[in-house]
Image (cartoon, rainbow, N blue to C red; front, side):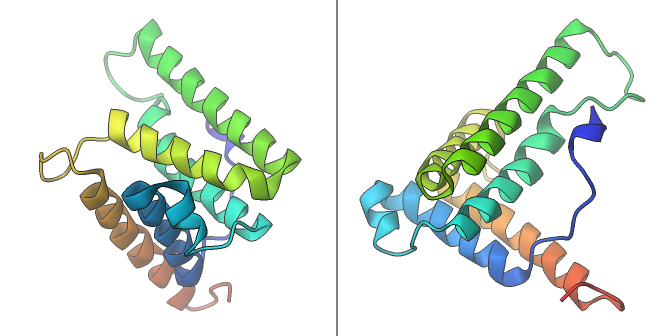
Length: 149
């Protein structure tokens, strides 16, 4: 259901860093530790929601051209849609209180669904690798001719 994710302006490198700084702080030391490092603001809720979409959607979305599709393929697609819809509603209804919940949802999704690139079970390393990938994309998008600034 790709129509659920509208075309949008990519996050800036600063936004990517802010979002992943919060995720890494929360993963490393919990809510109190993260709250002492990054303030929960409506902008941070927006950033985390965008990161959640960028992390969850590619893993759960069904590629209509993929071989071997079955009913379970569409269940995973729907689970991704439901999760993202719930996170969007949460951010819309209470942006600042949604920040830790969205971040915990991202971390839990990564822990349980996305394999660790080094096979050490280290979510911190996975988050750092994702941060680097997202930063490279953000730099490319915002340094291209005619890019949004």
